[in-house]
Image (cartoon, helix red, strand yellow):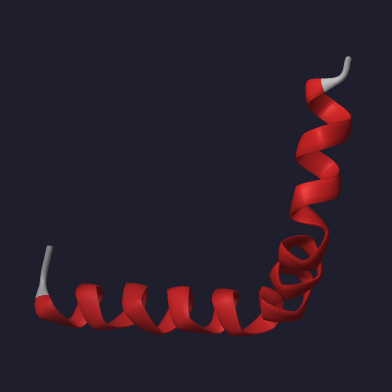
Length: 41
């Protein structure tokens, strides 16, 4: 992979994580409840 492709991939990854950060924060707050619910099934 060329350095230009590597930089482009890193930029896309940063944009993706930034776009979805709020979703993951919400999941993190409810993680204990989610895991306890799925474990009881």
